[in-house]
Image (cartoon, rainbow, N blue to C red; front, side):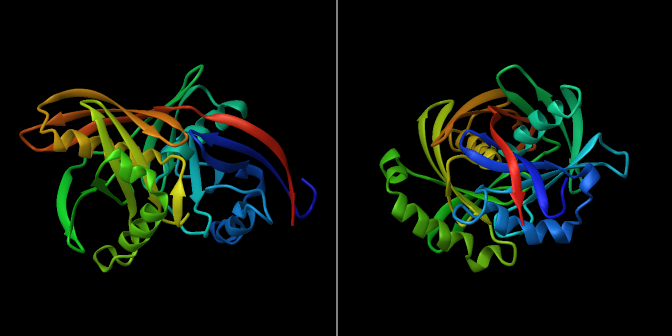
Length: 275
């Protein structure tokens, strides 16, 4: 790589787009990635994306690789499900096997790259909690990053100006300080299908898809229907396509586990960014 030039791959997963690069030889620090993210993600003066993803070796040897993800404002995200699928597909092009483990912060995930989709296994056991925020009844669901879910109608999901306003209000609400939260607006279609719009923290706008938000929304929709024990598969329709969520529910403990996210991971283009 020439000095001040970054070779990158642009990918998208159900419309959630990312800038990925192999950081194993570049060895850019976490601080440098924080500085770069706003420049690279800028859609007018940079490449444009919902986040950047650096692929690293795992020095702790706990997993095969490490995914270092930064939001467009340079902040950290607990986890990015759509980004993880793109990361997995990218890793395979660099020589990784199609089944491998990777670490995000202190959590180790398992990826399976299939012919037309990627499955991410989440090391997660979580619950759906009902809360009141600003007079609104919503659900809090932690999916290795912070989410709230607000059920509504399909008409509500069409009013994007209002969704942005309400999403921004809830994202910054004092109840969620200091980290803030992602905000998911859902509308159920039937027992195992729902529509979703997500206001993403760090992007500070609606995105075409949100993987961890799809998981949170599926669990919340299951919770609202008071479904019993068992293994479930829900389809979540987002603006950028469809995401499949898999999970198990244990009524006695009211916990969700065995959580998986499946969806597309598409290569868009590759290039070089000059600083």
